[in-house]
Image (cartoon, rainbow, N blue to C red):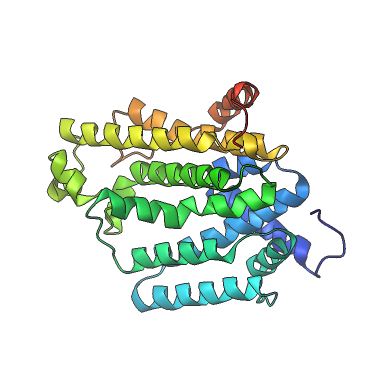
Length: 297
């Protein structure tokens, strides 16, 4: 579907707000979004801003206020999908995107459950717990973006999109261990901590021990496996969405490279990929698409 000028009053301002949110909070995601055609780009910004809005609610509010805020967010999302958006610009933009593209409300429902895990102070005892969280708060974003871009390959492509989102979330978790500790959150599974002989006291001290480095290498390798699996679906996306997603994936995986260069110290320094380095990755992303195997059938 294509964007038409018979749009609701205020939609351009609403989309511009979503663009600002995307640019401010995820320069990597924003860089990738610039390769979508204009109509798809606007929908991607709306989806990102809506997801970010829910995430900010659980990160920036406390206790009962956070619960009320998340309940309100979910009500607003449902209103947007039912064609009755509220006054917030994100609601208006999301309502337009959901009308123009077959974005599944069920993906936002899973995101809602993932955000509730943060509010409940969910304890991550096993890798299954962590994988479920990565699916809910990021993997399902692939289910939101694929219908905007258009795709072939059916469920196999959607599974690849899921894995790519999960890889990005695991990357976030590895990048933000120190920052999450300040919020009282530990996403590293307790059974994995025990396996690598890393205690909660070690984490609280913020000391990068040989055991901690081994744990980070293990999880970084898992994230890279998920990136590799996720990339198999990129050739199945339609048009310039392929380069958009390939660019974002390449830049996000670069965070793992920076983390390794810093000897896996993610307590006092946030791993990142600079703007110039992201631009240098564009030819890599383009070449990966040119040399990728045939799309999934």
